Length: 434
Image (cartoon, rainbow, N blue to C red; front, side, top):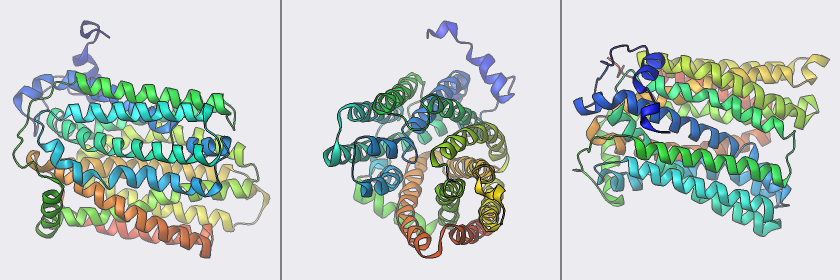
C-alpha cells in the first residue's frame, strides 16, 4: 500500500482519541513526529502476528496436524511446552545482540521472516509428512518457530517503547485482539476436523500473517538508540541476576507474573472438562473457538485502555478474575443434572477466562515496558521472559502431575488459589504509570 493512500493521523486519532497527536511521554521528539504513522504499522503488524498465532496454535491446529500425519501420541504432549518455553527461555541470550543494534526493528523483521518460513514448512509437512519422521520434523520446525518468536518478542517490545508513547501502548496492543474472531471463523469454515489440504491452507495463511508482520516492522521509522550496554550471553546473565537482587520492584513483578500463569494453565483444562462432559469433543471444540474469538474481540481494547491508566490494577483484577473462573468451572463440574452434560456452561467459563487472560497479557506487557527505562528495556523484557519460560516448564509439569492425581476439577481449585496469590502480590506492586 502506498504511503499516500494512508492517512495515519486520522487513523491514529480515531483509535486513540488523541486529536492533537501530543501524547509523547517517554519517547524522543523525533519519534513523536512519526508516532501516528508508526502506530498504523505497529497495529497492522500486531494483526498479522495475532492471526498467524491463532492459525498455528499449539493448542488447536498443531495437535490435529500430528494426528493427520499419524505421529505418535506422546509427541502431542510436547507441543505447548516447546511453543511457549522455546519462545521465552532464550530471550536473555539475545538481549545483548539486539542492544548492539541502533535500530532494533530489523531484529523484529528477521524474527517475523523466520516464523513465516517455519509456518510454510509446517504447511508442507501437512501435505507430505507421515508417521514418526513427520512428527519429529514438526517438532523440530516448532523449535525454530519458537526461537524466532522469542527474537521478535523482545525486539517488538523494545521498538514499541521507542516509537509509541506511554498511555498509548496498551491501547495499541488491545486492538489486535479482535482478529482472534476472524481466525476462529476461518477454522470453522473447514469443519471440525480439517484434513491435510485444509491444515496446509491454514498454515499457509499463518505464514502470510508473519510475513506481513515482518514487512510492517521494516516500514516503521525508528530513531536510532543507544548501543552502550550491549552484552554477550554470559554478561547478560550476570547483569540479569544482579538486577534481580538490586531491583526489588522488578523481582516482585516477576513473582506476580509467574503466579498469573494460572490463567494460561487453566484454559486447556476448562476446555478439556467441557469436552469430556459434553461427549461431543469436536463440536465442543468448535464452540470454544468461536467464544474465544468473541471474548478476545471484546476484552482486549477494554483491557488496553485500563492498562494505560494503571497496569498494576489490571494485574490485580485479572488475578481475582482468574480465581473466580477456575472456581466456577469446578463448581459446574460438580453440579448434577443434564444441563451440565453439554459444552455450553464450560464455553461460558472458557470465554470469561479468555477475557481475563487477555487482561493478564496486556497488563504484564504494559507494566514491564513502562517500568523499564529506555536504556535497559530490552534486557528487562528478555530477563522477565526467560524467568517466565523456566517457570512455565516447572509449573506446567507440576500442574500435569496434579491433574493426573486430583482430577481436572480439583486442579482448577488449586489454580484458583495460585491466581488469588497473584492478585495479592500485584496489589503491592508500585504504580509505574504515575
